[in-house]
Length: 318
Image (cartoon, one colour):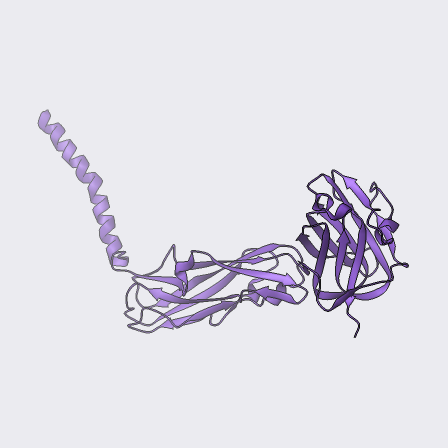
């Protein structure tokens, strides 16, 4: 009986191993992973991280920042035994960027017999396509190997290195910076200006243009806005605001400036962190407008925020 059990045990083990050995033998006839040629993509600057990132700025002069151009090659870990043709594709992964806007210098490359690295390929995107987007936004796309044509049947596309991911970070539109604009002067005649205050704000709009720093508009515990109708369309280079006692204790710490042609539809020039009891803001590029909107985003450190005077800069007269 003992011998019978021993025979059954050996037979069982053989039964388990035979299929494995057969399967392995069959695979070797079709594909040998130890001797395979693996095809992959590699950025020229691959040491800088797995994801390629581009940062864009956006102001009145347009889109600036990084050039959206990624250089890369097709590679194999050993010299190819026969000519190999590699097809590439681009894929957008976010709205606002279409795959057709991702331009490959070549959508197909050839590795000649004996080569391991292809000629350089570039993927580019024209940044001006983002000029109509005012918000801070990120876009992502990828370049991948879509197909490999070769007579070497022992060739495989790398599962982990066949795609190059890319992220484009676009900043929000900004036409503001701190400081007094150069070659500019304050508009002296403010008599015809019409100022409207957000409901609940203390004071009257006239307090902003009466030439006195002991009258103001103010609110405790929250930000507020007011609009200014200049009476006619003007070229402007910046604004100036004064705050109670010329103290930062009552001055906003972040504001947003908007412009409008009709006083109804507004375009943001961006928000800006700012400080001081007298605050000067420069329009990076002069604007042409009739209406301005001043929005307090971050209130004063004291909790009560005010404005005593509101002035606008125009280009200096020659």
